[in-house]
Structure formats: C-alpha cells, structure tokens
Image (tube, rainbow, N blue to C red):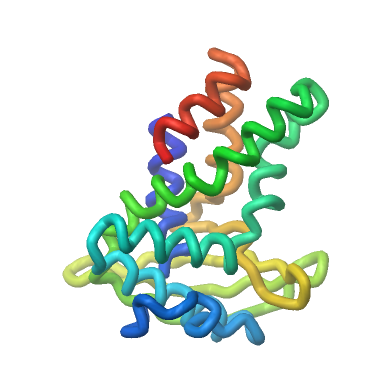
Length: 198
C-alpha cells in the first residue's frame, strides 16, 4: 500500500499537529470554534506529540484523532464503492480497525515533520457548510508546501474531513489504494492489513 503510505505522509501534516501541555486533554488545546484557529492549534498540538516518545505520541495522537478528525465519515468515504458488497460484520471489522490504523500510520509519518511550521494563509466556505483552510508547511531548508484542509462540522465543532497536499487529494489517494487491495486480495485482506499496521 505504498501510495497509501505516501498519501498519509502528507496527511500526517494535516491531522498533523504542538503545545507544551502535552499531557493535557486534546480538547483543551484545539480551538474548534473557527476554521483557521482550529487548523493552527491542531497542527501545533500534533507536532508537540511527535516530539514525545513513541508510546506517548500515539496516545496523544489517538486523542487528537478521536476529537478532531471525522474518522467515521472519512472511513465510509474511502470504501463507498464497496459498502453494498460487504457484510455487516465486515463493515464492523473495518470500522473497528480504522482508528488504530490511522494512529499507527500518522504517528510513523508525523515524526518526519516534527520540525515543520504550519502557517494559515486563508479560509473560505466549502460546499455543504464546510470550510477550506489553506496553509503552508515549512521544513527547515526546504521549499514550503501548500496544503488545503477540508473541514466539516460535526455536532457544532470543526473536524478534518480531507486534505490536499502539493496537489495530492489524500482522500482520493487513500480510496484508490484501498480499492487496489480489495480488488487484488478481497475486503478481509484490507482489514487484516489495517490491523497489522495499528
């Protein structure tokens, strides 16, 4: 699932997140009231987590995912073309594996961006009542990378629904990678791979 890992390396920049209050609840650091403040505080908090030991980073990242990423909506979109062909048990197994898989993948890739700085450039409304927040991601000694975060509101709070990094739509890349695994090996194989990477 090479393309998927590459896409998540980009997404790690997004659900990519630094605050000195590393052990404080994520909700205390991330401001969900405004799209621009949400992205800025989320990335700040995530990058702080990346600077901790791996176990602490994963625990912090799990809290960030649970509170600030639209995991259910994202997960459903990734397998949309397969939902009518799988059993309820397969769907349940997939949903169960998804958060742990995302945590494992994000955590591994986020370490590569612990020294990056995220600057919010602009925000604009998105279809369906969401918002698009444009940022630049700057690693020392490298050219800045443009990233657009697509946000949606869930129960009145902003959450990450997708990101486009350097022109790569992460959700589309993820869905294509999942499709490839399912077509070649079947849906159960996808779930096994997800569990093994958690």
